[in-house]
Length: 353
Image (cartoon, rainbow, N blue to C red):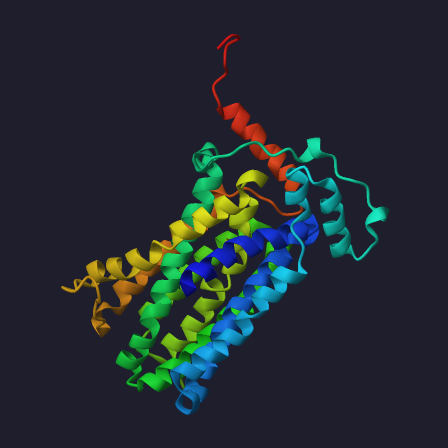
């Protein structure tokens, strides 16, 4: 139930934020929203490492409820998206919502014209009318999520296996990876406006692939007194986890208004298949007889990491070569282009048909 709620919030709140943002800040602010995901993971790791022995797992859950209460405050305080209200034929409410965001009197803004925001009736099958949006958002998510969750699930086990550290120490080492991802998310939020979404997505995929592959090659070496595996995975998380400052917001930007939340949600859900095929694929790669809980061994580290790196290559290639550049473009401009492509792709209907 918690996972159901968290997944729903992620797919609703990012489009909501984007529909309040001006074009020149949409990628940056959307990316910064995702920064607070690793912040929460980091706090959870710290609480688990240092507070759990004192307050127990029930106390740890209680501590997690407190920031969750902020969700209700946001729902009370933040008005509905002005673009959504305009599309629903509620121009006065849309003006008040925009005035709230700009902190100006509603009367100082002109009313939106309903004809500019007319929303056609849609069905979930309409997602397939935009094949490029579907491929970029679905397979970009699939590649990135399969790779990052595969590394996240395997890393503590590998630390214990290769570095011979106890589970508590392996958990503390994961804090370094989380910090790498946190810095990466801030950096990619800036990069999405600096070099564009397509190039930032390509950098995420190919950068993560290179670092994860190198971690597999040099997993048994010590650099500067530290494990090369640990150092390379920290840098790898800069790309792999940090790149989600592009993956999430971009998955909403490439869909027209009437499908934005549905399109992003479908992409996010499709990417979650990676949580299944990541471990399952690893089991097949390393030749484990247990496909449900594959066991790691030192000799299988390199092929396992190359397998995960290949998923990041998929994500990078999809974004770089098939991506729709949305940098600096208004939501309305993107919508017009997508609708024009849809109209071009449909077969012409003869008069009387």
